[in-house]
Every structure is written in C-alpha cells, then in structure tokens.
Length: 387
Picture 1 (tube, one colour):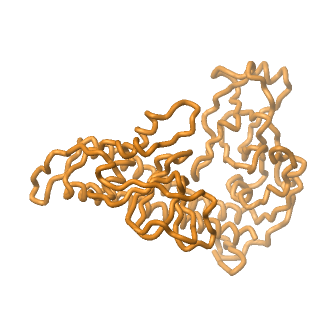
Picture 2: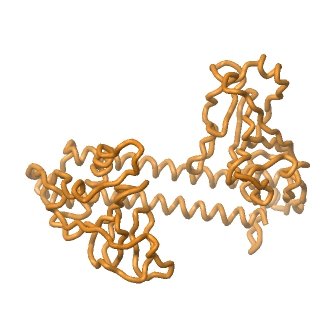
Picture 3: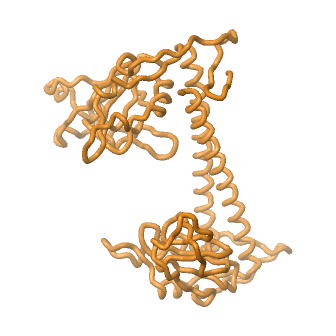
C-alpha cells in the first residue's frame, strides 16, 4: 500500500500499480429496487417471505445490522400483487429522512422491503460498495419536502470513481478489518460498562465489602441524609447566558457543559441536572464555574465526594422514577434531593470503593478514546481513498 498527501493506493500481489480508477454512474454499476407496500392485515405470522421495515434496522453504534424480520408475506399475496422479491446480496437503506443509513444485507432466502426503503444491488464488490456509499454526499440528491427523500432515478445519476476489482477487494478487506477493530472496542466498552453497573449494585447493597489494610472488616455502614453531608444550592442563570468564547464552564441540564464569561462558584462540586431528559445526570468538577437555575450544586462535603457521586448514580435515578408522574416532564426538587437517605461506610472504605470504581472508569475512558481514534483514522482513510 502506498500513501501520498492526496490518496491511498494499494499494489497488486506482484507489487505493481493497479490501473487508474474509472468514473461511472451508479446506474451503470448496479440496480436500485424500491420497496413495496403491504397493509397491516397482509403482514403477520412467521411463514412466507421476510418483509423488512425501517424499524427492523439496527443502527446503534458501529455495527448497523438488520434485526430479524417481524413481518412475513405469503407467496399468494406476493403473486396477487405481482411483486418481485429481492434475491441478491444488496445494500438496504431508508430512503426518507435526514440521512440514508446503509446496512449490509446477506440472506440465504428472498426478502422484501417496505416502501420507505430501497435496495442497491451492485455489480461490483459488495463490501467495497458499502464503504463507497459512506463517502457520497447523498443530501445533494434529496427531494425537497417535509422530510428529505430519495428516488432511484436521481441516485442512478451519481458519479463515482471505481478501481480495478482486485483493488476493490484489497480496499474493502482493509476497511472491514478497521470496522472489526472498532466493533471489538465497542463490545469491550459495553462489557466494562455492564461490569461497572453490576459491581456498583453489589457494592452499594453491601453484597461486596472491602477489608481494611490489616485484612479486618470495616465498621457497619450508617444511614444519613444527603442534605447533612453537603451544601446544596442552585445556579441563578438562564440557559441563554452562555457565551461561545467564555472562559468558564457553564453547567445546564445537558450532558455537555457550555462556556460563560463569568463564574459564581469556585469549589469542588457535584452538579446535578434538575429537570428535562437528563434529569439526575451528575457532573464532577473542581474549579471556577457557573450554573443554570435548575442545576443543583453540591459542595462542602464531609465525606468522600467521589464516593457520594457513585452512590448517587445508583440511587438518584431510582428516586426520580418513583416520584415521576406519567406525562410530566421529569424533575427533582430541593427537598427530595436534600432528604435522600444514603448508607455510608467509614471514610477509609469510601476511599477504597471510590478508587476501585475510578479505576474501572479510567478503563472505560481509555477504550472510548481508542474508539474515537480508530473512527478518526477510518474517516481519514476514506477521505484519502475516495478523493
């Protein structure tokens, strides 16, 4: 493989250059097939041809895949409507919405897709086709409407550059290996997060206990109110007080902090979102910052602040769920927060628990950084390969 400032090219098995890439239209490189419509009464059972909907597409994380079909259509219905099933390995995607989500579909039997989906059946390497599609700015070909949509006649006109089939395979194999690495890292992160969740439940229910440095049991845990362990206030600002060029962090009820020109707090604190979709989300920060009026600021702790944070991650969401009412925007009030009862070990055991969970968090963060770096690496490869 050779690398220049503008492109990446592979060599053949004898070390020679492959021929130049050729520009062609997608309509010359494969066939687009639109989905079909079946009424709900025509769908059902577990017999017949699988009928996939957009809702069957699993687009989470790095591994987009097609879930098992939830609907089937009988041969008689297919015949009566004169529908042709898709029998080839293809790329299946949603054709209505803000973006097209590709998914590699490999099935041994025929299948159908609904009329909100489309399939592209390439006459070239399917893996290369999948990577190629991720580099096409499909939004340029969207039809104007309430939601962007795509039709086959427009997509057939898209011009792309295609290498020799042998180079296609080398590129596809290489990019697939990068995808597999990303997938492995995502699974590793998920396993670590599941492990952390499970061990936290055991630690804070005292199913798992630490020993002191001499191997002896720590004293029993004591129950206290959160309001007796720290000072609890709120910010004073509206969310629009933020400034893009601000010098200090500005915490609202979002998971990401904003920036602001002035600070109201200079302390080590836990910041808890008081309402909205992220109610109960907890930030830790030490330094100068400001806060939204529905963000709770907890500081002046008598116990280990990191231990309290971990314990609140387990208990606070449960408390909010208990007090939530159907149809209402979730929120938490000061009295509820201050009155929460927490079971606390002695400071030395708090530190052991917090240090252990921090080490797990550091492993999760390390894997997250590896995922981000590998994804950035792949993005750079695609930009250089498909110039």
